[in-house]
Length: 130
Image (cartoon, rainbow, N blue to C red):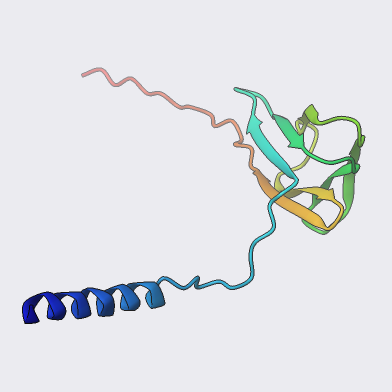
């Protein structure tokens, strides 16, 4: 009987210890995003393909900016459109950093891109005969 009582007390103590350590570390819950953005570069081109899926009926703004913050392009996704598929031709832009901003209400997603072209190198071949 004493062994059963000791076992119950130990089990109760361990149960209390585990539940007190299981507290959430971040007391402020994170808000779920109301839109998601996917981007990829089309193969062997400087075209960025952008896919957006959103919920709710708010407009979404897509802004392309350069490193200094100058706006290069602005596009709107209407509140009735739940999906957006777009292509941005970046072949006429200079080398450097660019930023896509996706803004819907108070939410903002920032994606950065670095354009870096490689200059063609002249290949020099020599053939030596002995």
